[in-house]
Image (cartoon, rainbow, N blue to C red; front, side, top):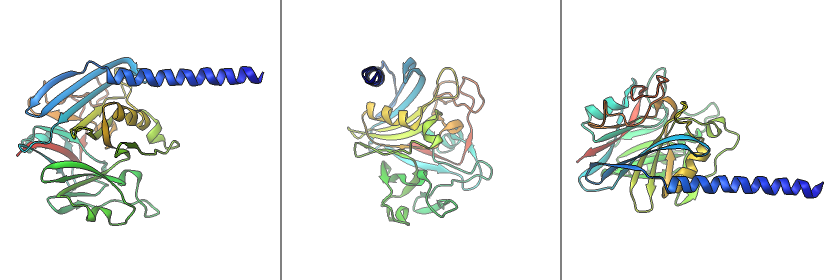
Length: 286
């Protein structure tokens, strides 16, 4: 009986290992559709037909080489909400992607945002006056170049960061090539949703990433699955941003309305389901 029990465990372990290996190979060997958007900027898209995490997954990646003629910036509204595409258009941006978490009823970010040295929103702390898990990392922009920072445990950490623009968000997925620990009991982490993320690769490229979800064409990912995908696309730093119905990637003059992915807020598999958001990450020409 004991022999049979250990045989079942071994078989289950081998099956999980084979699934994991199959997933990684599927991501690494995917024949991504690659389109040039601008010098140093390429869009990569791929639809995984039941080949990633045993599910349909639609992934879009805007890959950016940080060049002198390009710069990152933040778009925001302190109190109201507008679609990601509108932020991009009014900033004459090359691209825009939804940013960090916000108050869907009253507008404004619930996470710290600084723009051009001015604090726009402070962190809204929890009942115990502690940081939310999505307030323990940040996108930082200095001289137009983007990087990812990890909370150092200090109360006023954001104010110590050497950056012109700061967007606090999270959870952090990978830092310096090491996967961050995620709470296995947190429903937000375990459940599949549309996801938005930013990553820095081994060769210093910046990746703006959307994963579609809440549709039979794309299941969405848990944060554990998203973290694995980040490793397979060569990220050394990666952070989760606001996702769900907010997930949207817009590119100037792209397709029918500029929206690359399939936002889920209208519950349709099209490019018209944008949710209004409080802030975005922008890619612009200098």
